[in-house]
Each structure stands twice: as structure tokens, then as C-alpha cells.
Image 1 (cartoon, rainbow, N blue to C red):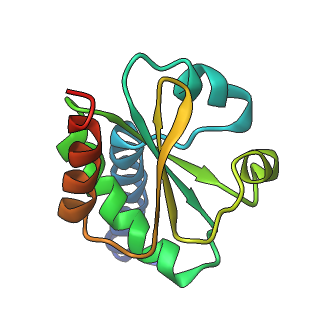
Image 2 (cartoon, rainbow, N blue to C red):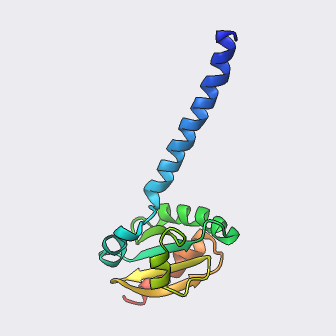
Image 3 (cartoon, rainbow, N blue to C red):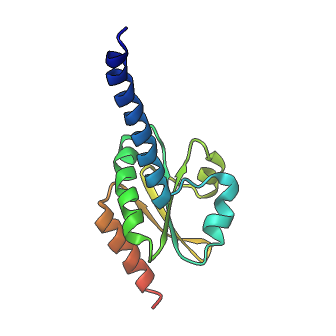
Length: 138
């Protein structure tokens, strides 16, 4: 095979793979996946409120909400924390905080579930719902 042809095929494919990995890492920076073993430290002991999206990767509604929650992570970074928990990988947490009917968001304040939101929402709506809930403390 001609080296020039190989170059023009292989280099763009490698570039696409690298860009996809960088994009995925950038998303994870804003909204982390919280593993079971870190849950208490990251969520329960958090000094700020934390909104957790308990999701099922096979649920269509959760796939829609994942993009909304990732955008919410950027918007909410100064007001409250945001994270993801895969209920298939962390069945112990799904059982601990049941009922969870996907898509399910739970707002944790001072280590306790303060509010549960179920259904598909826009990131702006979720932001305002959480901020309204947090304003009740003021």
C-alpha cells in the first residue's frame, strides 16, 4: 500500500479517537461519575449541596438527561455540586436510596436527601428547581 495513502487514512482516524477521548475527559471534569466506594466522602460529607443523577445506561430517558446534567454541571459549579451514579454498577446505592424510577435526580443537603426529581427536565429548569429548593433555607 502506498505510504501517502496510508498516512491520509490512518492519521485522521487516530485524530478522531484522540479528540473523542479528550471530549469525554472534559465532560467528566464538570460532572463526575461517583463510584459507590467514594459516595459518602463525595456526597454525604460534602460541605455544599450535591445533585446526583441516578441513571440506568439502558434507559432512553436517562440518555436524554445525561446531556442536560452535563450542561447543568457547568452552570451550577458555583452553587452546588453535580454527579452521576450508574445504578447498574452501584446497585447498593440504588437500594440505599430507593425508590429510584429513572430518570431520577436526588438533591443531597447536609448528607440527607432533601428532594427527589423524577422525569426528563431541561438543564435550566433543573437549575431553577434546585436553586428554589436551596433558597428555602435562606
